Length: 425
Image (cartoon, one colour):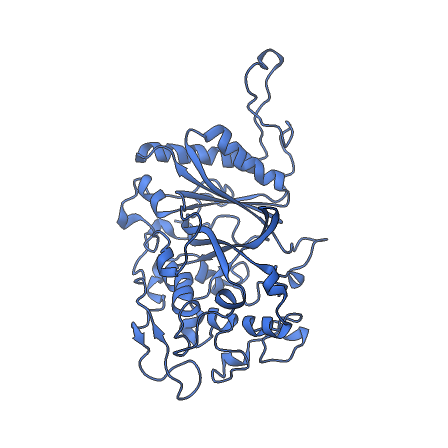
C-alpha cells in the first residue's frame, strides 16, 4: 500500500488561508460516508477549476447553480490552491470506524489539561485547510460546500490567515518573513520536503511506532538531569497521555494535525524594551540569532550554545526557544513538530485583532505537540524546578484562545488526485 501524503503540508505556503470546520448533519455511518464522498466530489471540481453552470435564459426564476464570484468559465487560475482534509475523533466515530482501526493517538483536544479555555471549544468533525494566493479562490471552496452540501454539513467556525511570506519569485522570501511580534518566524522548523529524517517525524510509518520516545516518569526525573548543567536539579513532569504502541496499516503516510487559533494584545508588547522582548523569545530581534551567540545575520540558523552547554543561561531557562525546544538530547529531537501556521489579522469591535492560526503536523500528538506544550512550555518545573512557564506565551505576550482541535489527515489513494482520501472500510 503506497503512502501518499495530502497536499497542503509540504508545499510552499500560499498567501491566504481559510480554515473551516464542519459537522456532519447525518449521524449514522452510511450517511456520513456518503456526505464525505460528496465533499470529495466538490473538492475535485475545485482542484480542477470546474465551475457549475449558470441558468439558461428560460430558467432564471430559480437560483443559479454557480455563485459567480470566480466568473462562469472553467479552467480559471486556481492561484496554487490546496485543500487539506483533517478528521477529528468525533468524525471517525460518525463514520463508523471501530476504535482499533482508528488513528491511535487521536482524541478530543484536552483544553483543561492544556490550561486553556477557548471561546469556541467545538472542533467539529472535519477541518478543511484551504490555501491559495487569491482569497477569492479560498472563499469559493467554502461557499460551494455551503451551497451544494448544506444538507450534509453544518459550518462550525472559519478563520482567515494571511501568510507573512511567500517563496515564489517576486514575493517576500522566507528569510525576511516575520511574525506579527516582529521576530523572524519559522526558525528551527522541520523540513519534511527535503529531509527524509524530518519527514519521518511528520508522516506515520506503522512499522516505526516502536521508535517513539517514551514518557518520562511522573514527578522528578530520576538520575542525572540532561538539563541545566552538572549537578542541576532534574525537572518534574506531569502525568502525560500514553504513547501509542501501534497504528493501523491504512494510516501510513497520514499525519496528525493540531490547530490552535489565538489572539494577543500587541500594544503592551510594542511598549516593552527590545531587550525584554528578546529575553522572552531567546533570540535577537533583528538578526534572529540565539541570544547566546553573536548578534549577526549569518548565525540565524546556528544551534544555540545551550544545545551543547545546558548550564549556559545566556538564553534564560524560561525563554520561548528553550521551553519549546530544549535540545537536551536525542529524545528531545524526536519531539519536534512541523509548523505551518498563518498570522491572523481581523477586525473586532472597532479594533484590529491580531493573532496566530497555529497549525502543526506530526506523526503523533502525545509525544510531540502535547508533550511540548504540557511537559515543557506550561510546566513550571521544566527544565528545572521553579523555572516558570514559557516567558513569551504566558508572560510578555499572553494569548486569548479562540478555538482549535486535534485532527488526523488521512493519506491519499492516488498521488495525483488530492481528493481521494484513504479511509478504513
